[in-house]
Amino acid sequence: SLVDKANYRHFMAKEIHEQPEVVGHTLARYVDMASERVMLPVKLPFDFKDIQRISITACGTASYAGYVAKYWFERFARVPVEVDVASEFRYREAPLRKGDLAIFISQSGETADTLAALRYAKAEGVHTVSVVNVPTSTIARESETVLQTLAGPEIGVASTKAFTCQLMVLALLAVAAGKARGELSEEDEAKLVHGLVEIPRLMAAALTSEPQIEKLARDISKSKDVLYLGRGTSYPLALEGALKLKEISYIHAEGYAAGELKHGPIALIDENMPVVVIAPFDRVFEKTVSNMQEVAARGGNIILMTDAKGAAEATIESLVTIVLPDMAAAFTPMVYAVPVQLLAYHTAVVMGTDVDQPRNLAKSVTVE
Ligand code: G6P
Image (tube, rainbow, N blue to C red; front, side, top):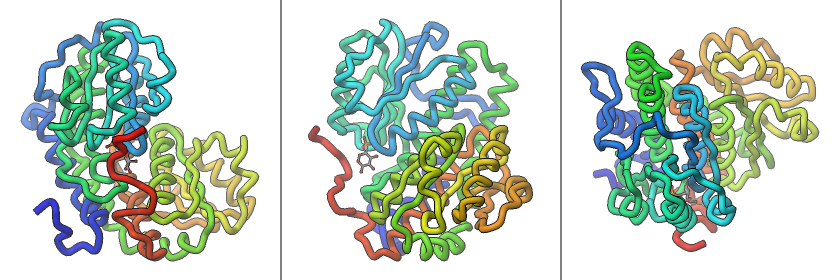
């Protein structure tokens, strides 16, 4: 059953390994497999052509899914997107244009700040879409439109499979938006959907990096601080990597946009602070390589998550490379989430923490 640990030591391990399956289920709900076109299971009560701006609001890991989605909506649909954490959005009195769209992302559908942000948006007269995992939740009930993730029950406090399922729904919604706004042709849509159909298989391939990551986790567990870097859609994933590590291993970690390295974190680089670089071979790869060189020149130890092309290009010493499958550049966060989660998980296991129930954290934060 989905709510026992099966043969895994922790729910988190089980939930990481379930991802190819549940992301595949989620995809199947939103795509017509025969024609490789997006087919939303619900009819949207608005036309994306009429939307001038999208506001995305969430907390924690769900907010990083929103941050990735910003890149997708802006690229595929050419619509500006703002992302906020709900605790800021709800009190900021952000001006929203009537008829625009606000998206709320929540695994539980009960997070107090996200719910308050949803109520604010409704009062402002915008359309509301929620991406939730629990269809009977308050956020689902109060939203104009619900797009469900089919992650199944997530028990580990640190979100894993809900995150990648959120990404899948948001990617498909961004493609639908691009199509509706005339920014994507039928051919573009088919190509992008085809890339998404490949994701479950690629996630399964990414899971084979686990033995290597388990070994790396032993080194990471000796560090006091870890820096995560990424550009483009890998930037929010760097934030998520740092969040996962600190939540469950209690090792201090920070995620940074790789280009901001020289504006601060470079001062911290020495042989004691590992730097995890998330850099698939995409159009910003070369830029990230030059950031890695800056880290290496200061004695920093780098763990590079990339693909075969990236591994061949990045000839830097003091580098450990985790090689992930070649894939469509737009959708790497779903696949690269796997090694990011595994690194946090195995580090926590080495540290001996309570992985599924980390201290001071709650699965669902229903009070402010
Ligand atoms: C808590 C959990 C996180 C989660 C966040 C948002 O902090 O520990 O894993 O990302 O709440 O929860 P939600 O249910 O709204 O996605």
